[in-house]
Amino acid sequence: MSNQVSKKHKTSVGGQALIEGIMMRGPKGAAMSVRLPNGTIETEYKDVKPWREKNKFFSLPLVRGIVGFVESLVTGYGYLMESAEKSTQGLENPPEEELSKFDKWIEKHFGEKMMNVVGVISAVLGFGIAFFLFMWLPSFVVDKVTFGKLLEFHPLFEGIIRIIIFVLYMLAVSYMKDIHRVFMYHGAEHKSIFCYENGLELTVENVRKQSRFHPRCGTSFMFVMILLSILLSSALVLIFPNLADINRMLWILIKLLIMPLVMGIGYEFIKYAGKHDNLLVKILSAPGLWMQRITTKEPTDDIIEVGIEAIKAVLTDNPEDDEIK
Image (cartoon, rainbow, N blue to C red):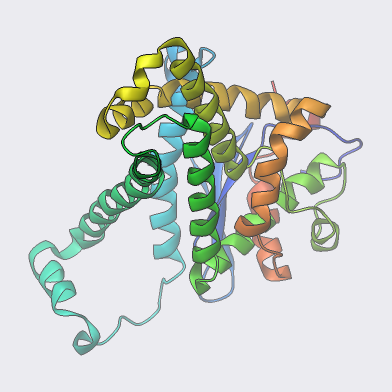
């Protein structure tokens, strides 16, 4: 297949940075390219049908955003674990004496299922940390500052605190060596997509010149969700003034209940932003694009090569078939 594109266009291609690899989704399905320990790149096609294609209800506006978010969490975690396993293929296992007592206990009682057990534990801990940092803590701070009147200063205050926590958290993890490298693959993912969308041949030199900040990024989606959450919460307070007197946990429950609507609207905006480049899109996309200065890093040429292989695997022979529908 030729990767020479004749004109600029907006594609439906999206992806995810992995451990030493990149997963791409496009018109031809999904594919995962991983740099193996021996230096070669392994690309594997994924025969996975999007959930929205399995049921017409899942493809409805607003609903498809919720379904897509859940699907990306489930499948994305699977791809991440698989890439971690592939990127260490053939490497010697650490000596038994280097394992902690907890690791030895897990290995003894669960054997081959150890990775699944660790994965479940990690997922539960991750959810707990996310709930604490981004749901409970902002409400707690507002509650204390307003002396028990949770919404005395409006949900805008709570939203600002959530944004600050989110930015500081991402900034902190970006300094971790392994995460920094994942962010480099994130940059390569964006650059590869931009190269194709700009009508250029998919070469290392062309990809290197592209921007690493893309409006359809999951980082932008997270920021859009935070902004939408502030708007919807504010609307609820204006419609139901008595919400200012409820306790913290009940308010958090209400925020959780409106999350599906927030995800649905957020998805529709990101989809719209992928097709348009007007002033509204630029304003609403700006915070997410700025945040990508943290969540994406400039990739090296060997990482760019992985991005090129991944995007080639999901493109069709006709660029028009790759357009956003």
